[in-house]
Image 1 (cartoon, rainbow, N blue to C red):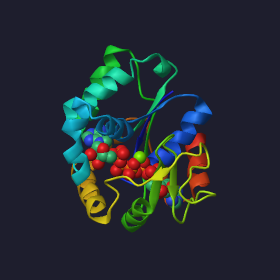
Image 2: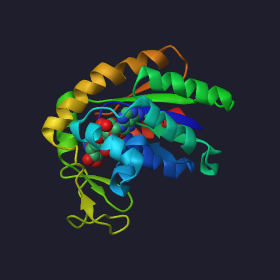
Image 3: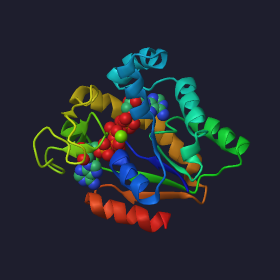
Image 4: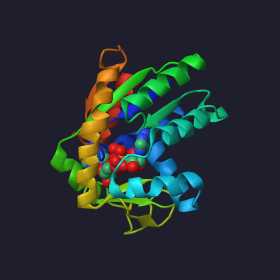
Amino acid sequence: MNLIFMGPPGAGKGTQARQIAEKYGIPQLSTGDMLRAAVKAGTEIGKKAKAAMESGGLVTDDIVVGIIADRIAEPDCKKGFILDGFPRTVAQAKALDSMLKERALKIDHVIDITCDTEALVSRITGRSTCAKCGEGYHKEHKKPAKEGVCDKCGGALTTRADDNEETVRNRLTVYDQQTAPVIGHYRHAGAFKTVDGMQEMNTVFKTLCSIIG
Ligand code: AP5
Ligand code: MG
């Protein structure tokens, strides 16, 4: 089962991808998470990506395409994968098409999670993330049992460097200009679906499960 989760920043791609990954036993491939790990580790990719990420802009296509090409070749992707936050430009979508063709793979579902703009801003500015396992929390919608501590693994909750209001607004503009056109790339393929991300988290999850089967 190969899936693409699309949607603007804060729509719930990561929240849902983590749960779907657990239920279906396939990995969540978040280019955002991979790039943040590279920035933290100070790798060459991390050094190149840092400034774009902090301003809310996109990292270059060659970097993210390279990351995904390597990642989907790993053994844990044999049963399938969930692309979370990739492709984000039409050029990335075309590169993915060729990558899949070369490996005789196909995407089963492209799911666009939609959400109102003001809800996106409040979701992102209220978000915290576990530094250890990546679980996401929200100060109103998903509070941890103990403040600042992950319910799942006991790790410390942190705030992303790009989760302030100014950067969020820039990320939304970048999404409209560069990522929304990717929907056109997939819309006419039978595998494209839209899910209302304004619903409660569990309802979104159930809707996704009913699509995936
Ligand atoms: P990335 O990490 O992908 O960030 P993003 O797309 O901006 O999306 P988010 O992770 O912010 O949102 P999400 O949809 O995952 O929401 P979440 O589930 O956490 O990318 C970061 C940066 O990396 C980019 O800006 C770019 O620089 C670079 N990058 C990454 N991929 C790239 C690529 N392919 N090409 C180029 N550059 C790339 O939910 C948000 C909050 O809302 C949480 O607090 C959650 O608890 C809450 N929430 C979730 N669902 C609900 C709900 N239904 N109701 C109420 N609250 C909810
Ligand atoms: Mg995410």
